[in-house]
Amino acid sequence: MENDVTQSVSLGIWIGRGQAFGGTAYKSMEAMAMCLAEMKESGSYKILNSDWEQFCPTHVGLTRRQVDTIIHNLKEFGDTYYQLSEFVNISPETYRKIEPKIQDHQIEIDGVMVPIAAENAVQIRDAVNQMRTQLRKAQEEARQANDDLDVLTSPEVTAIQTRLDACFADMRRLIPRLSDKDDHAMCALVSYSIATLQGMIKTLRANAASLRAPMPPAPTPER
Image 1 (spheres, rainbow, N blue to C red):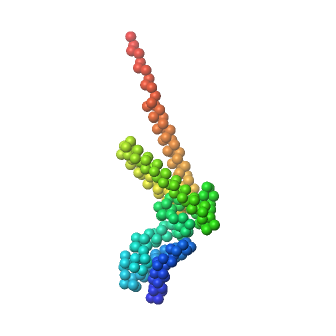
Image 2 (image 1 turned 45 degrees about the horizontal axis):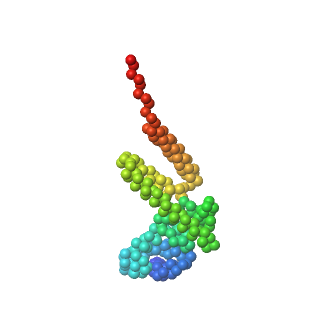
């Protein structure tokens, strides 16, 4: 048992020295993340009489925060994150936003599922960079819209927007992990939400039109 722990620590040290970062296949990155996660959870690193804060920079060559991020990314995204990172530099934040387009080690490009593989590296890199640009544009438009709302809306409307944003975020996080049954339920929920919002838009436009309409003439006084 002690020998196994020692081997585990040695493997973590070997990987953390940088061999896994030298442009190797994503499986090495995944193996490194799995090894680091196992060492942290089992506490096997303590055989070196070191706490986690000291162990990471001394024996892995990375800060504790960097190591924890590697472990977290593996747990949240799985090995596909490292597979995609082999071909394009992508942050966890960006990956999280394009994750709905990724499934079974493939990425959706122009409506077509493209395998995340070396032969498609250029196409994948261009597509992800384009998605990143679109996300930045959408974020800027959303920021501008939020700025406008902060100026023009009441606290009640702002509170509703905050709750809606939270609901939409929850839905986006759930979509990639839904079963077939729940997928149909989510589609029905989205359709219901769209129909409800469209009905509200019609009501708001009607109200706005009535406010802009000319006032009816005053009645002529009876003589």
